[in-house]
Image 1 (tube, rainbow, N blue to C red):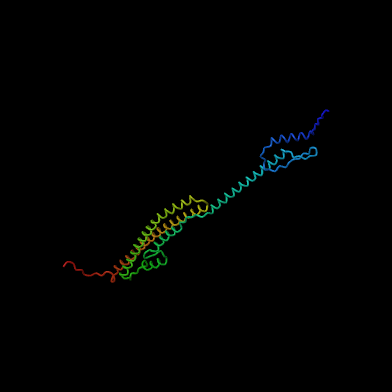
Image 2: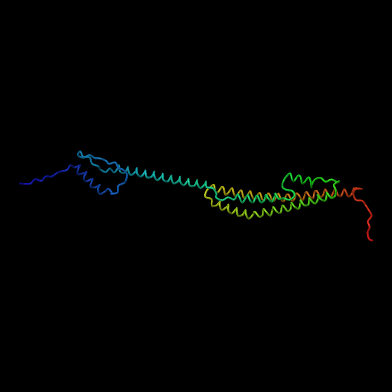
Amino acid sequence: MTRRKTITTRHPAARLASATALVLTFAIPMTVSPVIVTPAHAFFGGLGRIVYDPTNHAENLLTAARTLEQINNQIASLQNETEMLINQARNLESLPYSSLRTLQQNVQQTQQLLDEAQNIAFDVEQVDQMFREDYGALAVSDPDAGLINDARDRWQNTVGGLQDALRVQAGVTGNIDTNREEMAALVGESQNAVGALQATQAGNQLLALQSQQISDLIAVVSANGRAEALGEAERATAAEQGRIQRERFLTPGSGYQAGSARMFN
């Protein structure tokens, strides 16, 4: 009895699908992208099977790349904003160094020297009073003793004014070393400033130092001018006193009276 061989013949579409699946098995890498790929379905012989769609996969990869680029752009934007906030915080940081106390002490020392002015202080009312008493109009009827006392007072005022000018000059000169140290410290703080506010504050303190130096200069000029004014006032009053005494000497009767003089025994 002859055995009949049964040969099962597959449908051509089924054979094509099997070959395609075998090829994809070796062609697709084992590491799959985390991007969700929408599978494409093909119906062969009434059976639904999942097949690889390269067009859909490429679109998903392109979408993932664009999303990653957007995330990177957002990260870069956040980094720029963070850097901007850090710079703003630095610009608002205050200067830790202050030279106000030192500058105020220098100004107070110079002011104290001016307040200690002898006889005639730097006060308008006192100046007017002293000038009425010692530098006012002289009269011919004033006694000689009074004229001599007034001349002595004027001389003391002039000498005191010269001494006051020298003391102010010495005090201002003593501030030079302190000002030099403060200037070096402020310039260093300005160069090492971490923000705009610190640089501005250092510049303001340098301007304050300059104002203090200008105040010292004004004090020296005022003291020197006061000494010169007192000297000129003394000379002008002395000239008037000399005129009165000369007139008194030349007036007949009340002035010089001739008398006998005895010379040589």
